Length: 132
Image (cartoon, rainbow, N blue to C red; front, top):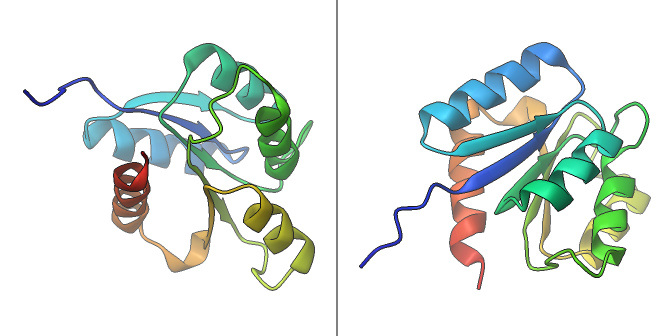
């Protein structure tokens, strides 16, 4: 029998309008949604809420998305197979960012400006389907 439990996504985004749009879209698509406005808040919610996938902005106040991911990956209580999808306006050509993401698989990188909300949902579903 298929497991009908809602999949939980944690969305960490410091721009209120964007966060609201993501939350509404993922809720509409049947996800259970956790949200945070900076990496420090997101880190706490990730450990407490145990989401199935994370959607992170990179540039945020208090703690950026890359630092949050690295802190989670170093935490013994964190399931390192949980996919992390970065959505950012930063250029993907930034070597440091790509190096960190590559070293922390499963982690993925997408430009906010190149994806619609629907495409973001589909991307998240794809990454969840790949999870062992």
